[in-house]
Length: 355
Image 1: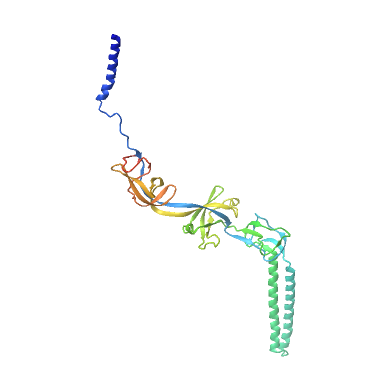
Image 2 (image 1 turned 180 degrees about the horizontal axis):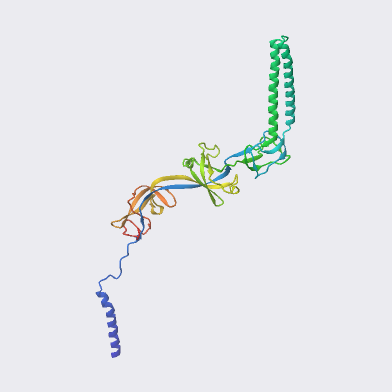
């Protein structure tokens, strides 16, 4: 019995040693939650530019589409696609079935001219001796003039037929297309050859009127083909919309196309142009702005009180990083960049060290 009483006293004494000091301690059992740490930024002036991806087609800056000037049968083909040609080089020979006829007409006209000239020479002797009237002599002179005109016309026709039968390269460059084979029958409507000049490559593309208003000659673009980028300069902006599509055609010259086989004529490329821009405008990070009831707001920190205040702002153009602030903020404000749903009007905060 005595032993049990001793154990009970010991237990009570131990509990007293634990409880009494705590009752005497005036510190609270739990400290209040610390103010959240936030990051701030001040609005800055910068340019915002939005780019739109489009599809364009590669063309040589100088390109000629060759059509025959007369119908006929191809008797000889002297070039093929991928070959370089010089201006005036014969591309193919065509039997127009008219050269012989033109040569015959030329020979006849030449003979008639010779006879008229010889007759005029004989009559000149009579006219000098007074045996031929002025009127009759002038008639012989007119005959020579008429024969000369007929000869000149026949010569021109013959030269044209010869030229038509030997189709020549109008410029020096690379044969991009040669759609010809011996014995083909061709006409004036058949495209037989495409020759790309030795100049730079250009990219043609079409844009809406809104985008066209942001484009001008001398502007820069970026072209991408098979993951490789190329830069270029806009050289032409059409002010007349295509009647079929309603779009405006634009051309840009590439700075350096490198390996020509990587940008063949007619290939499609992806390109990027500035579709909208705002220059030297006040901006904040996009994540700083949130929306409530269709209106835009940011939280601004009172640096003296270290408390947050909700401020309505008017926004403008934005990209993936920055948004234009048209009104509601100044460059001296400190805008919250770490906003969350746990923050609210009047929240006391601590600013992250290093800011």
